[in-house]
Picture (cartoon, rainbow, N blue to C red):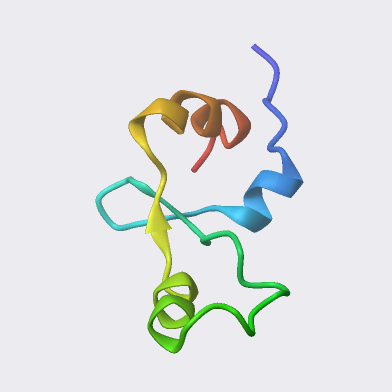
Length: 65
């Protein structure tokens, strides 16, 4: 069977945890930050885990992760 290609765009957006889950960045921290309070901005800066709904799609994009 031939090698599978990794989606390079997905490889830059997701990283794996030690237990095999996928880590992602949160949205909404690029612009229009003045109306968001400091507590919200700090929370948006922290990484989150990929939801089980999207897990199958991410695994398909990253076959060797």
